[in-house]
Image (cartoon, rainbow, N blue to C red; front, side, top):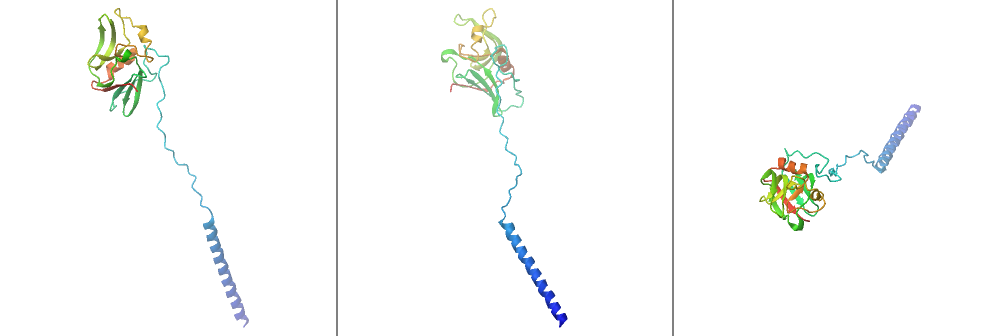
Length: 206
């Protein structure tokens, strides 16, 4: 009988121990479910904004120098090359690959003499001189925009070959030509050297 009593006590203790462990497990599961889930604090990489092209326009304006302090763009692999002449800003914009490549100071025609519209680059030449009494001016590095009547070219020079300082001072500030788009000497030469025939040119006033 004593052995039977001891066996019953051991069995009872075992059942109690198992029941207690089960209860603890249930409470543990409930506690785990009630705890707020912690979000991962891993830093997600932010999308990098496209860098805006910093202004590199040369100041003060110098008609002997390129309009920008940055180098002229390499057009070797540029697609959809185009040019825009802004009459209201007295600027020429070179665009390609869907972005602005270069900006030039300009001086366009007074009294609306530079026509607005869509044109394209045509012929070019090293020098010209208009000897008509109303003009008597010439320029270097000319590139035709419209029928050899509207050109990109340097600031003008007189019959003695001296650059007109007064007209050169208009560059990037105000209209001052008879209709052509006057540029600094290096800018006009770069267009003469680098811009292919047939490149579209838009002249507008916004």
